[in-house]
Length: 444
Image (cartoon, rainbow, N blue to C red):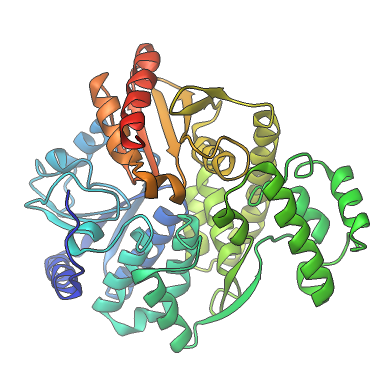
């Protein structure tokens, strides 16, 4: 699909049309994805609609399946909002007799007779410039300017979708600047690691992942000792000389691991302190994402509402999630299976698969081949990740996974840099061979 020129006027017109439609309904059903972007989107939309006196039923799901859509159709609710999903299921959603609003940033199949607020239709890049949380925030503030205070949740979603890598761009950047202008956000520049202490931050660091250091506390202690950095201090307590020394050494390690220059540059970046949430946006994003990935998406949504009782649970979930990611990455350090144009591994947990593929793609694996993760459940779930470098060379995982999965009786889609699919278990080899050929053509 040829990208149209940016058209903010039509974008807002579409949003106002959706808001006018929703104004006729007292009860609204919200369906959103279970990751940080999906939960943050649901948090923004829910809080905005509740302020308008609406009654809501929110469901956070891993996948929008045909069976789930058919179940929704039989419900008596008059209006549905799909967040961070829906653009790949237009045919099924058009069967609804009820009203449907789709707020999505994934590559759409086509326009729809239902209201589809998809960034791609308005010349806004849904991979790097706008995520579902961005759209939800623009919808909320268009409905009422008092919803400007929800900008922190938008930034949490943007960061959760990794769209801040390389610096915010497009509509995402406008959202951050608006938050700063109205006093809800403070911008700083610092090393992109976080933890209770420097020891904790590096030991449980997966972004960046330091080979033979991350996940190994004794090795981290030795690493910090060589740099003459105390293990028990927080990052913000380091002096400038210590921060420079730590940043330079991490960059050198990543260079030796074969990471791309763009990845190394991103170890230092913009951070956003959220006034209302009283925390860093990246920290909030990690908490929300951990809740969703560990099947406690409701806790993540509760965080979006600022419920204090949820934080104790969220902190435990975040620690568990980081430990599980690190444990899996230590196994992947040993290597994965390589084909001529792609590389792949089998993940035991689909909720971790995308993150593992992304981390490995950035810090461990062959930088010239996209990474594919397979999880063997009832059907085989596929997660894939590329890099900006590969996308610039022609990689389009959204198209690749859609075509390869369709060829074996499955379905898929997403973004050029990150996409997913579901295929029959017995078709894994055929799928991989087909995808390998498609990616080879794209990168030729």
